[in-house]
Amino acid sequence: QVLLVESGGGLVQAGGSLRLSCAGSGRTFSSYAMGWFRQAPGKEREFVAAATWIGRNTSYADSVKGRFTISRDNTKNTVYLQMDNLKTEDTAVYYCAADSSPLRGSQVPYDYDYWGQGTQVTVSS
Image 1 (spheres, rainbow, N blue to C red):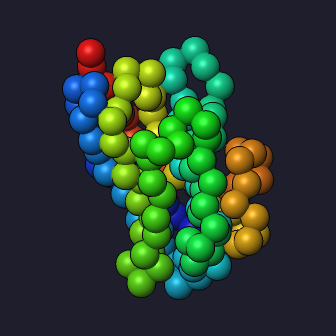
Image 2: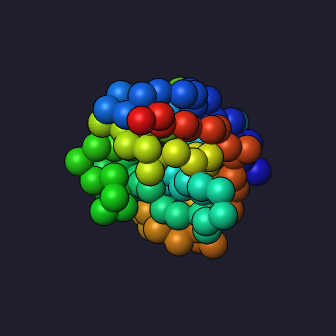
């Protein structure tokens, strides 16, 4: 069982930056691949970024590549999403998720076993 809690969301102007954090409980945090997803009103949940168990392998959605960076600190049981050059279309609720297959780094929501409650990111023009 992994409990995930996101933080760091808020309101920012277009072109600005935010860093989201996701703190996980449990001693086995490092044995999970971690992902970030987002969901805008009226839209399906979509993949943003993923990192394998030690963060060596990462992947990104095309829409955020070059602007967002996923990283993790297993000593702190925390995964981060650094978001730079934010755009209005990045507005969504952002969720972190844990996948018990540590090497997968999947882009598919159904592959993830545990989810946080989400944090709102709003980008104004």
